[in-house]
Image 1 (tube, rainbow, N blue to C red):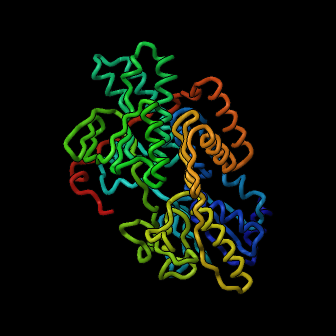
Image 2: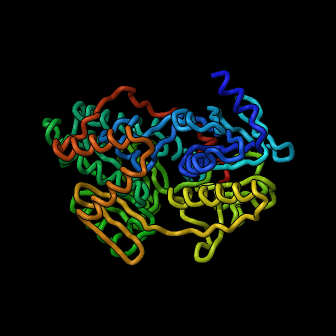
Image 3: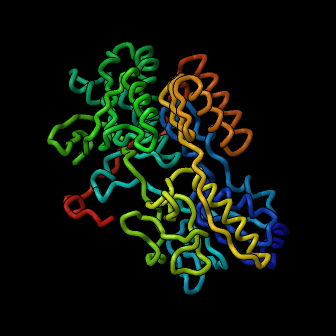
Length: 442
């Protein structure tokens, strides 16, 4: 181990520091494997998380280790790539330093691939009370929460108490919200009905709330309508053109004054770039992303690049930036890797052009929608396509095999098998009234 570390440290190449091991960061280090650069990946976690399948961990269909892959296993065969687990706290571009909770890291080229975080639009109380789905730990919290709610409903003294425990509200009608709603609807039909026989399964209500006039607003109207029909067929109540004004952990208040009782509210209403202190001059406040040129270099900074969700590049019809999805992040990483290789040969960089490969979302068994150019698919074919694409996109053969086996067992048994409350979920302490009255500017 010491010899390998010495060989890495002794490499005479320019040092590329990559902050974040999401889709963009992981793709970049893969393509720089063996290149004339010394690459260092920094991440606060020791693993890559395949976020598109997080909702299946949250709903007890898959184990957490099925969608996670250790960074060290990835970089082990890469002689010019190393990994450090740390929290990045800032950047000092004048001295070319990345500041972390483990000390300072020197760089020649810096790549920010920090991804995104849940956007609560400055509502501190909502941030404190609502659940979110951006990490494995949050997915496990959601799993424990809905299972605890099922158990608590058995002890409720009246029907109102039971309904409050079994009322699940999902805010946000994008792919995450739609997929979560569909998964919970299947749990109501199978797990709750068969294994919690003392409860009336019809008392479990799943609400999908969105401020837009349709779900999956970035999909075609055909796919959006089809997804809405699937949701309603599964018993999901969809509330469109509705905005949540507040939530205190028990009561949801909408902008129109209507209310709804629920112990669980999942916020999937938007994301914002995970910005890093020290690069504020390139940040676009309303977008919470870094303005970059067509080579992904931050405007106003030399040798600093941003990729994926945290990068805002205007190009052609993408006047507000590229969509914050995995494909955009991966494609940007591919182009940046090519440009860094060109740079090592003294060649100029080439501009990035985004290729939209389509969108897909699954709602339940045999129910999915796919948009690919002029092709709009639904039903069984779309469901199989969704499974194939996500299975092949997973990192590592072991993860693909685990997920495939998990799906096969669920398909045959109609059961979400990993219903374990290993780490009971405890709601965070309530924020102070002063914090609620004076939310920060976003």
